[in-house]
Length: 252
Ligand code: SAM
Image (cartoon, rainbow, N blue to C red):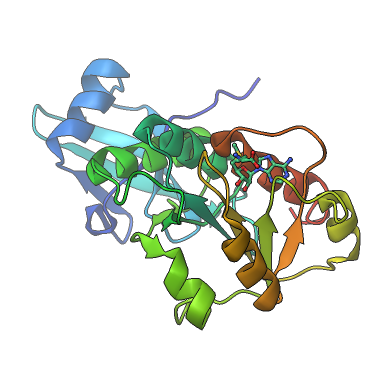
């Protein structure tokens, strides 16, 4: 059986032609002390360009690891579509972290904290911790890129003026817990194969009537997931799974 190699995102400047020099203290510590990587071992290095590099460790010192690229190939873990999650910011940061973790495993490419009328929190703290979660989830799920954690987005601005430049999508899926006439399964059956999808999920308190009316006015796809109410941190991953296993199941 082939041994599964450890995977690490390394800084792009650590790679120069077929030479690799890792000098980030935390990464050297994790590789040598925690994972006990030794000279002669191989690992997969990722620099976020959608490729993966099989690297042999040549030298290890306290401060750095020197390696050589043996193989370069396209990473299989990326979908050829943009899937953005606009998550109504929950009161507890741990719920937002759940969305980042599971959303990354399910192929989301970008995450934005969405500040809606019913949000108690107005900004995310501990961004560095969130970036770390994204990186670890991307490594664990064998992604070739670390998803982007974007800035807080004020929902009123989007409802008034549409998505900010660069964040427009072919389809916007607006998850409304009280929608019982249009279900996601029907939406997906008719959706075709868009190249970009924005997914909008409300916070714990859901969306206001005004927000739902404005979403209809924007001509977004307002849908329900059936008669069970999901927690805010469950809804985004549930929608991503449905996309992955339904509409995008033919994509590798
Ligand atoms: N308090 C809201 C209510 O009673 O209508 C429920 C909010 S729910 C906990 C949080 C968010 O998850 C919702 O705003 C929606 O975006 C999404 N969600 C949860 N269950 C859903 C469902 N059955 N259909 C569509 N979206 C759902």
